[in-house]
Length: 241
Length: 322
Image 1 (cartoon, chains in turn brown, cyan):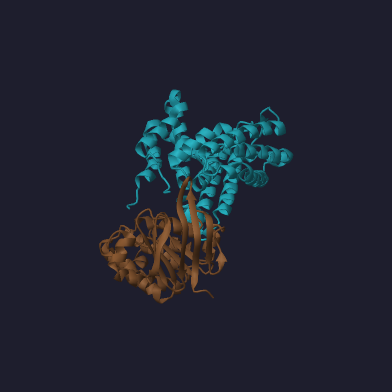
Image 2 (cartoon, rainbow over the protein chains, first blue to last red):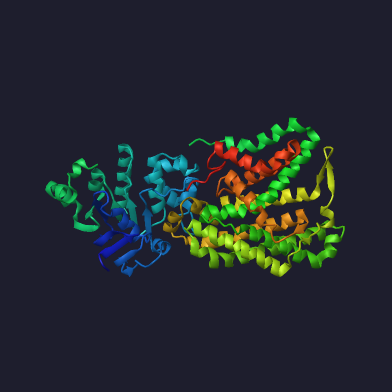
């Protein structure tokens, strides 16, 4: 069994007449958190959407656990055990918190055990369980989006900028939640702009620029090397939060 | 996000405001008639709002499915003329129920084919949707003439449905009460399915964010087909109810209702089933009240109602978040 759960090789994506990804190569290793970093417009969100089949790869291959998935439809990709949290969170605002979670479960539904595990990560969801998701605060919506992605055991969690626009206290809650998820050995691919978050939860890192991967390595090495941060990201990660 | 009660108050407010303007007996007759008319309009509009809400498809051929339901009622009722003419609630209801069941099945089946052949190629292309569905309506009307002839076909109500009952000194047509009961029953069934079942949850979720529904592992295409079939089946049921009310079926019976159905959808908020019920009731009541109080402006009353609602709520009374 390969160490990599998800592997992208030479992935190119075009949206209309725009050529966004120019041959993306990287892997997300099993049981680890891989941070996908880069400036705005580097192609991070496009990469995640291409993995999920929401935008079609025009060239290259995407392998999940040894199986090619770049030609599969989004529902089929999701059914392989890949959960996606988009940048917009994708919450169904007119459905209750319970209904949002229920849609992410299979036949077993919302068992007590699953809910207990979820509420241990995000206690706020327990209090707001029966209210429409549209009334939640931004932080609570993000907790619901992540909670929905993990309410059933998933093999890969793909999350796009979960801390965007959130207050520092809420970001700390999310960091705590991701650190607890790490202990369960869930494989996570995480796009993030917040340095504190990236440094706190990332094991591996892939840095993108102009639709390509320009660096891969250990997150700890990037955190420790300010010159590398400047070269790859154009600024110190310490200022980038 | 506080609950917005104002749109819920519009329907009761209209009913109460009309009372002092026309006297209790007239008010009761016109209110029941308006609500019954609204129930029939709801049956015709509910399918279209579901289809638009989930699929963003402007199906201008919806009227063809109303017409199809009306003609199916003609074909079902013709050989059962003895049952229709019998003084038996059981036999009369059997004719009506059979017409509704067959119309729903036929309209739904034709709707399934229409989605596969016509609509599937134009998802996400509103202009092409309007063109092909308008074209579909025109072709369908010619097909109806080829199959059932160009002349209007009489369709008498079953015997026990004719006439009135007295209620509080006012004569209320029995058929209107039946139509009102059917409309409310269909709304209750739709509400139950949408709020209590997983399919209903998926439809409501899909109305808001189709992409996320797919990312959760559900094949939205199958949901589209199902909703299109249910939507067209509901149009067929609406056609049956309207045909028995009009007692005359033509190839234009559904097409003539298209504008009114769209007014209801716009007033209620595109994609909202509850909104289409309230919108249909408002249209039915306004037509009746204005027809009694100011007959000269009754023709334009629904357009005026729509303009007033849109000035107040530009996305209709119960807009659905996308």
